[in-house]
Length: 301
Image 1 (cartoon, one colour):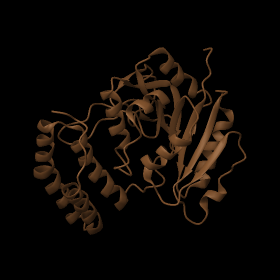
Image 2 (tube, rainbow, N blue to C red; image 1 turned 90 degrees about the horizontal axis):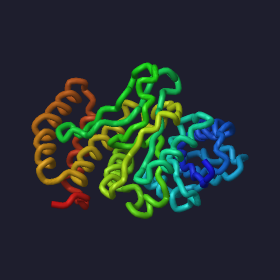
Image 3 (cartoon, rainbow, N blue to C red; image 1 turned 45 degrees about the vertical axis):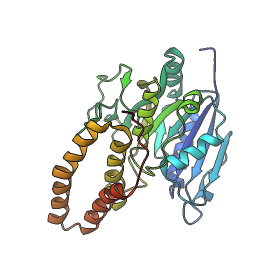
């Protein structure tokens, strides 16, 4: 490959300077010669951002006065980026030295590429796959399946392919595509924004690719606990929001019927039986938010 375009790597820090420093440390062995690192600190508490190791070439730390969420923080990184390609990377990851080359090669080889995500394996169980592409989203449950999730990596997903959605943990998008489709949708704040953005990218005629020659290791979500009330709220709120923004009227009726007749009674009973009143409130707040807030649909009749 003759051309070595500049890659802007954008990652968000929120009260995790130690984790961010571990990511930066893994970049010391990266073989791609032309990249810049942009850390967007989403108003971390107790001067956490002061502990980020800035002793790296081409590193810039941007401090927000408030938490802008995943999309808002990344959009700020986009505005500061100088690269021809922009890689959005979770700070709870560590990278393989040669992980950038295959993604650039994918863009350069397939001109209709809109976004590329690498193979993602679990950091603490590096033989296990977390991401090898996504299936289509169900119009009923508003969920998709992750190919390879939890499987031992024996090379069964070593063939690059088109996929339905990029993975928010690690996704590369070209500046050209961003200028055409716009920034990440900030209505979500947390969860589902990368699915919405992937859908928008595809609506503009581009394809989303999974690239197995590129590898990162993910330490899972450290900023939001698995049993977090925050996660309960945003996952359920944004699942419905995605439907409202991206489904046509027919599939909206199908999804709304499933949610009201199956999901709401099922989840309400689940939280009541477990005496998880805080999660029950967060769940109902998420549903009610969609009844009281307008959004602009991206689909057309």
